[in-house]
Amino acid sequence: MPPAKSNTRGALLALLAFAIYATHDVVVKKLGGTYSPVQIIFFATLLGFPLATLMLMRDRTDGNLRPRHPWWTLIRTVCIVTTALCAFYAFSVLPLAQTYAILFTMPLLVTLFAIPLLQEKIGLHRGVAIVLGLAGVLIVLRPGAEPLSLGHVAALLAALTSSLASVIVRKIGTNERSVVLMLYPMVANFFVLGCALPAVYRPMPLMDLALMGVIAAFGFIAMLMTIAAYRMAEAVVVAPMQYSQMIWAAVFGWLIFGEAADLWTWVGAAVIMASGLYIVGRESRRNVSENRPASQTRARPEMGLMPRLLRRH
Image 1 (cartoon, helix red, strand yellow):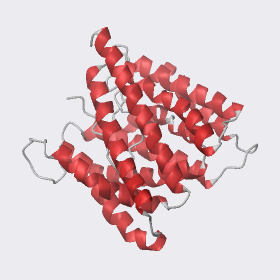
Image 2 (tube, helix red, strand yellow):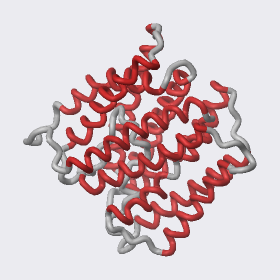
Image 3 (cartoon, one colour):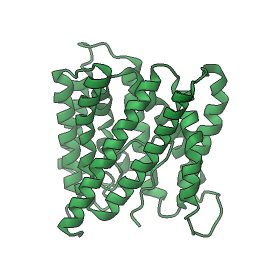
Image 4 (cartoon, helix red, strand yellow):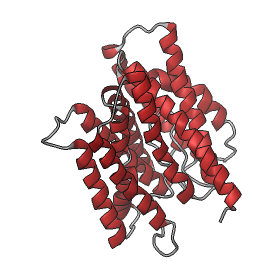
């Protein structure tokens, strides 16, 4: 168990990482008012390749780029491309706080996906937490009372596909090279979205192209900081730091976009966050969860621009 000082440093580092992630999402939302998610992701991925190359040059593992689990790698790659498109679209059309509230269902969905994929057994306590968390989603969405938009569907789909991608990494990550886990989704984004780009392309001034670079750089920096935080401190300490993004969502949403989350969004978000925190805390106890899928999963959607490497070693 890391000492208290390491846990404190890890928590502070995670807080800074998620503040950078929140700023990353503000830039996504700002550009999303003008450009298609396809164009944003394509250029952010393109500008992220040099950063990824620098990181991959440090990989001294012998081997080739052929995945040892090709079908799982393919499914994960499809999930990450889908997550990127859906999450970027959701950030573009929904208030930041509402988007985060829906994406915060990830620990709940990861726990659900772990049942068939990791043969994880879910007891009564975590089962109740999952049900309450999903009820929190209904509070945020309020079907029937508020019109559901394509943005809400996109945010939900992003949470689903990102959670599935994270559990797949928990399943195959010890056998696959880091370079394979990182490179395949980026290459897929480049080629798949590159084929779709002519249909949605809009000319970009230099300043907007620079903001695409900011998305790539911030995603890269925050990813490195999150990995460092998890290596430094216990997962049960680091994972809850993701919820600080709700504070940034409130601040940025009000200052930059003139957004004000309503009461029910905050109530639903509180229910979702409490459920996620309970699951992570529950998994931190011995003899409760062998795989600990939620607490060992980095709590940030797999955007696909710079996919996270979830192994602790």
